[in-house]
Image (cartoon, rainbow, N blue to C red; front, side, top):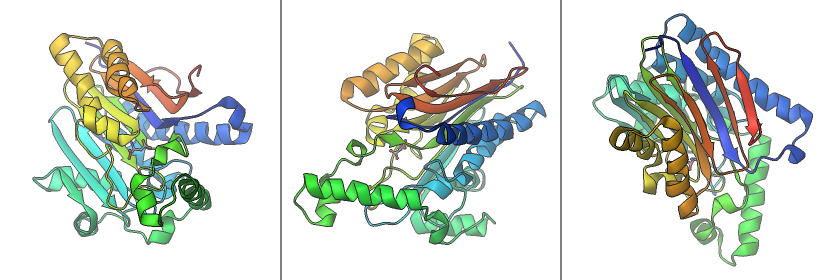
Length: 321
Ligand code: ASP
């Protein structure tokens, strides 16, 4: 078995067309992805763990206002921030997650702390924030997450809901399908295989623009948006409800485990049968124990990138790179 590392990341999938992007915005996204790849690569090439690498890469993307996680998170219908994140260590099978947090700068670090310092998997809301503060994780005020483009995105989503539905705000949010308005899912994630052959996955998100209060997506749900074992590590992005109903990340692992599917077969069949056939949209990044990387999505594009030991970092946005 190879002893080389591989790392793959995503910054969300969706209606991404070259014609809709300027050269500057495209370069900014690619720079953000490259920066995250470098953070993970530095760890992996110094014999660091896959777990450390995925946390480092996701942290960089959380700090980048372009992506829907951490600093650049989207707003709920009520204009608040409710972030979700998870991390899973394939070697030990341990996992940690936080959901519905609004004051933690890097939710991926809180997810990791939950994994390492509690006997639990998922902490939510005020309790998760209290736990994070107690463990020395950086807390920020809600204004930290207030970016203009996300605020405008919310106003647009609300306006379209009002046109579509003649309801008051709360009822509109309840029946409104947020993903119909702005088909860009900016969640971030990373999967890695380290030199020791261990795998890990991490995912972090602000969820869906205009989401209902208290709504939690797939990202912090182990087996739905995030999963890692000794065979494969997966991180997803898209309409979380479909990932949760179909346990998409675990579905990929199960195909490899029970059917001996290859990584590529497992990813493509899962996207087809669990997502596309049910009307869901999104994508995944996945890595297997041999260090193979697979990107699968049924949207027009997915911000993504990867680096393999001895190779150059590669980033891509559209279906044709
Ligand atoms: N999967 C995320 C969620 O449903 C959204 C995204 O991927 O952007 O919360």
